[in-house]
Length: 496
Image (cartoon, rainbow, N blue to C red; front, side):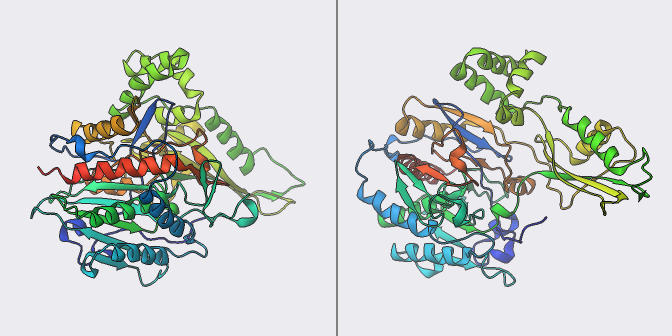
């Protein structure tokens, strides 16, 4: 069932006064997901396509080193209050309001000295609670391409009776912050992008997303208060819509039959046809595919992981992979999702009466398609797997566009690696292909390359994002805040 409509940045209608370059590029939320693949790796999520950006010298003075764990700094306590206010503003689809959250964030920016001319609230008239905010910190150099920081304000539904703690009250306990959106993404589910006049962007983002929204607002507040003037303008967009959509393709399987009375069963049964086809689908694996992102990931992670899994990763990265190596990695659902297109049955609907032969049987197949693979090619593959002309296979509209992943240029990676060395000494930066859905595909489809990085560590269970008792480590949030602040300053100081 399709969820309620939520709004992200889609064209000039929602971005009056922000600039023609932004309007032309069909801006949407591009919340990239980032996690920790192992104890010694920061993972950079790549979800779209990128343009090369000239590298420049990165001054060490631009990096803010993480403070040792202990009593929070005064600026961290101020950030905590902003973060608390955002977490405790319900922005779920059913009863929440992104517009209210955006208004509260605008108040922080006004208090920091942002004039009204640099703050642009927006909302679609038919969805008054799904509004957002665009803020601008002007740059010193006229004509220099801007940096856009993106984050979504909306969160997945959370029922109080299901949670151990109130999901819309920020609770600090045992070294964690608990609450809906603490990681996804009121702390960090944002992406920032470099706007080029020709319509190309590059950037990075985070997890999911009030954490990121809070970090971006806090970053602009800090920059304004210290009197910092970037060489290029920094724009921030807080939107509402990431949790209502994702980058996957659904296919409907359907069998239609004349049916009849259940007292006279026949072999030609719609449910049997569908069930047999689904059984064949459950036994099929799409072929292994690699691109620059996954090849680099497996190459770097092979030495970190070691053992049989590390050896299989190395085999894949060097092009010497065999069926055994692929089988080893496919045992891990997370790695399997990076190796190939995956399709799984998620919904069933069949029959119309308990005493009648079914006239119709349907199933929904959810596919996470490897970048560059055509939606129609997957549909044809499904038809071949099902091997039954009685089972029709149709795409469920609207379909997401097919996009290619971005190259990992030095201009993207060098700043990330430098800040990582300063804040997380000894940690290696490893790119990863993110199987979860984001709106980055729309940016890529419009010719806007997008990357994602959070600089925040998560637990092996992904901090229960979208689940009960969502959380983030307090120190991870504070360190990630410093990580992104330093990274934004570096990129804002580069002009090509």
